[in-house]
Length: 475
Image (tube, rainbow, N blue to C red; front, top):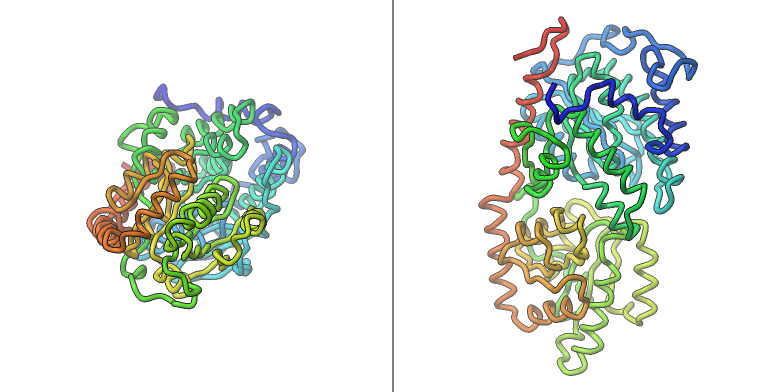
């Protein structure tokens, strides 16, 4: 066995250690794993035993496909709302794969099962979202894992799968993949977030829970046969921290479909009569830097606007939802900026394009920290696709994505962020030129079409390792 891999027995030595599994999560995993054959993951006596025949497709014929059946598992967003997962699922379906998805309900997607564009979607009740505290996260993730284990048996019976494609966070879906491994199922890890750095960004510290996140990350890579990364920085994490072999890691960048994300006039009503409109789209959470954006807006309007009226003749259109939305609204109100901000809530499809196409500048206020520095921001790609210039803080992957289609403010400095906005407000010609550069950059090398070949190559790689029903590994 390769030195960079942990054996199954070593993986399982972590199963009952309370240091690695907070009590609430541990109980949830006991219930989840008790439905698997032998109930042996947490010892005997937890739940009922289930025979191996319950884990295989024997009760109904499988639907026609090319023989490649995939189960995608995601915990933090419903599908098709999760844009990256939906692009992956529909791309695989169009390439002849039979694709099923397990995800939470929420945001209007409440049917427990539906098939959309050939993708079979199984949803579980949305767990209570945790914002702070180990016990809160243990409850959220423990409940989600229980439903994942429960629905995986249903999907196996009704659709079949030979590969589990797990999307983090959390870095715990390897438990589901490990449970199915004796049945010939292999694990493909879709690395959406660097969870240890995400923890550090949310809580501003490391400590024992950070160390736990590093352990879970390592176990995730140890269980995966193949990993796909959103950018080169994530690929380096997979190689250096995850111990993956270079030939088993594929970069599949997140990007919109250019044929659907088209520049246009937008809905002028969103401008509220302002001379220049800034736009934000995405999650409104603790680590997205919305406090920095509001501070930058105040600096732009109050201080810079005092000497140049163009700086005060602005409006900010904020598209999205998240746990800190009310906090951000309160901050805007406390600074007396309500007239300069519109919060649209979540928008999709034509409504989203109507809002984003009307803006003049796309903003990405994500602060510089170990997580954001190596993360690709979907909103930056979307602004560029719609020919919008970008202002963001100077992040490694932000520069890799946007290049000269963006201006870069000094790290976490609202005043400099405002100055960069002011530079573009004062120069419409520069805005237009940067917008053209951004769209050209996407069309040439960063569109979803460019991500399809590595996605399919990753699947060719993992299906070469899938165990045949006879037990013999495929070449």
